[in-house]
Image (cartoon, rainbow, N blue to C red; front, side, top):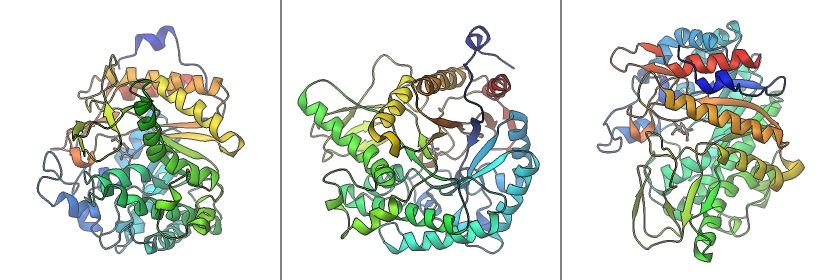
Length: 440
Ligand code: BGC
């Protein structure tokens, strides 16, 4: 197995004792077995021609539903402490749907890998809608059901994955399911997901859970220049993609000017949304360089950003980029986390990096090794700077169904041949296994 020469000469520093090392996946992206679950908004979306770049669907995906034992063996071979996966609400709604997660959790426990389920990772059952307030209550009922069944073995829970992306891509821009292009009228979908998070925390507490968090996506917003118009645009972007989701959870309030855009009087809801959490999950991929609007539509990172947006996204120059075109900026992670510490102070619970990773082709994936190496070192810098970080999860264990990109973007430590479904550990799998061994 290939070893990164830098780690041989300059090993990654030790993280604090008890630090949780893991990998992440999500149900819709890997499970397949679509015939054994109710349809989700993603099934409906992928059925519409032109929505997914390669025209593929997640009907089979990695067939993890049938091959979960093999995948748990891969986790055990990697030596991770924990596995973050998601529980498909549409599968739980179908007969015997929870049995699958029961088996998976048993298998993980037997392998000595801690199960860390996310209760919503974008695959909403068809018929439900985040524009409707009632969806938050329905979610809490679903969470109670899951917690009653798995709570004897699952100790660490994540309520939602990235409500920011789900709102932006799914409801504002229409690039993801459910495919709406509402721009700022999408904001109620964000509020109802945040309310669902708060209600889920309450439901989990009622079921006896004591280790609960959310996985929010964050990244620094860098102004394209020092010109006031660029600085203002970057501040607005930061508010919309970062603070709109961190502030209500951590401070129980919306950033100034945002609460007024939400449906009705949200003050009582904010008390629920601000229910204390035990850890704060951060998904980090890259910073964004933001400039003043230019009055025209732009293409960026596979997205079409309409001219009406009050900002544009510009290229970060002089950096390597991943296969997705995302810049590789490890120190953005240190900046993000020290910024969180400064901004939230003692309101910030311990942080867990719930996702970090990159898309590159190939099995001898030296680029992925360099990406992960750089980001783990940048994370250590944040720890040294006094940020309380308790865990790091690589996105992702397996190559998978990368949403509107289909199967062309490969984020896995393990290669999946989507014809035969054969799994082949990549060079990065061996590298990460060695990093974990050295940490112990
Ligand atoms: C999502 C994952 C996705 C990954 C890479 C995150 O935003 O949580 O589902 O596969 O990014 O795009």
